[in-house]
Length: 493
Ligand code: ADP
Image (tube, rainbow, N blue to C red; front, side, top):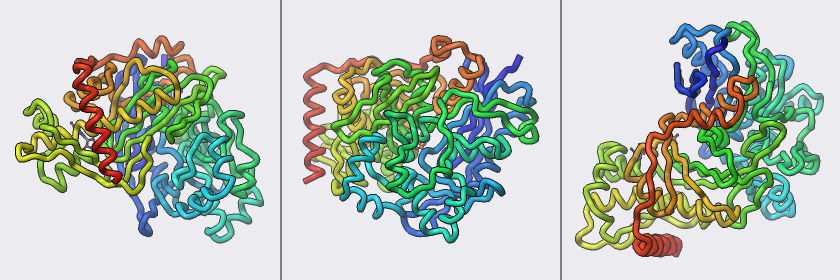
């Protein structure tokens, strides 16, 4: 009997491997950071060979820690930083250049130019995305146009493109499989999320040779088996999903209307909208949540730019707290913010406001406001910003949120979780296992090989650490929201 599912979680700054058992409990874990390269202002690159080498290293380390062999592992699930772009030689495996990371702004001008053309509308209609340098298409185009010889080699059929999942699958299978899953394909700006195919019009518009593109498969699917030299056996690679979609699956958000929020540096909210894509009227992105059992589920996605980063700012720039966890202790020392509101629009405002010019603001300052009030206002801002995105999602999808499932570093903050529940008037559910991204990838893999029978069995694995029920009086909630929205307008004027 094979005992474990291996999750390979290849993030933006580190690679992690977690071995889960059938109950979804963590049996072993290893993690290693890799190098971030910033060759020019606004540019971000990764060494793809270093990514694979560290990933393989943590996989071996996690196995060695509990004496697991290749034969103990039922399947591998991969989850990854999305959109990051790699192009390599199909014969030698050599990348033609460092990976262009999702954060890299080198194609921002190109995207601004596209926005002024009819192509912009076509892209949004076919891919569900907004035009942005995050997504892979303009990054591929940049490599084809700027790295000497690359276009000719691509046209000759010698090169392959992949997001990080594809690069990992190709390397794990010893160069036998060139594939990705729906969720990663959906972030390239080349994939038609309605017809579920690479879009011929978009490929032509970006002048990308068809032979570069990987085969697109469901997220829970037998992609191939590992080269036996690598992990001591032919292990099936059976689950693949981008990090945010994997977290949605790991939080068991299987029903339409189910949503999760990850409170990290920023916040990432995803809501499952069922089997028909929902188009946003509020600037949210429409994306594929996963492909499973012959069906595709869609999601609405929205992000908050500054969330946990506001807490870091209190700590590092203001020196008001010694560490992030202390923010809870301070917030609980006072009953409210004494009328002050903090909008941490350090880099502008995202959904649903979309104002790049907005800047941070603290309103309502009076002589009685002290540091505890300010810290509390900062924590509350995470919840207010989340609430703004949640409202946009519920209105776009015409679905009411039943419970908000939370994870990420700042979800450990009980004050924040309770305030979120109060202000959004919805139960907030924090799971015991907060490794939801890795868990989601392993669930997708385990379902494909029969390690778990179905999503009902998986749902039983999810144990709540704590459920926060809304308890704020309605009038007070309305007053607070009104004052928050007034502060948001002020920071834009
Ligand atoms: P990321 O994956 O974006 O690096 P994490 O999920 O690791 O982020 O979360 C780290 C962020 O969460 C930091 O910005 C930090 O300020 C914030 N954070 C961590 N613990 C707490 C806490 N107890 N209360 C509030 N914020 C916290």
